[in-house]
Length: 214
Image (cartoon, rainbow, N blue to C red):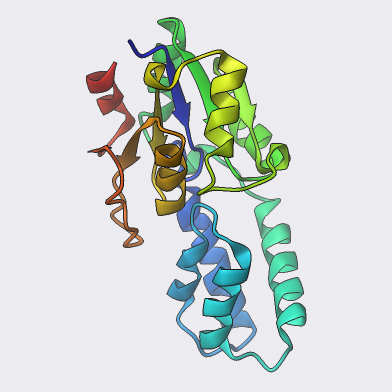
């Protein structure tokens, strides 16, 4: 019997990945780099940073050294991300589905590799912070996705067994983390970024379809 539902944030509850990709495209354009911003999609959902940067730098070829490039890009993202406003980015059904699950007594968790302030802002602006029994951020982890730590920690905090929970993810790294944790992992279908979601146990178009697994 399913007792808990674990949600990733970006790409599952809110369409913030589109926002982040636009920030990257703006950075590339404003700094005159001649590369396709789509190469940066490797970051979606969390990625081993050294491998990601190796792939990115092989295509960007900036005049700056890699550390200077990374510092400039991180600062640009930081400034733009701090302005984010989530209500226009939320998927239409997210709030009603989450509130309904909470009202029915399911244990809910938000499991994101993002910074605590970012998750807090999203859940507060969407007025669903009170729905989540557990919120896990990247700061709580020794290892990011696809390591299963984030979901094993959530199971422990909610005192659930693996067969009592389902995970809703979108990125290949998040899906892999769920599978590595031994928990049924459902992918919200990606129609924008060409992500490989093939390892998911099943697929949904919208969060309304979670009902089929409860």
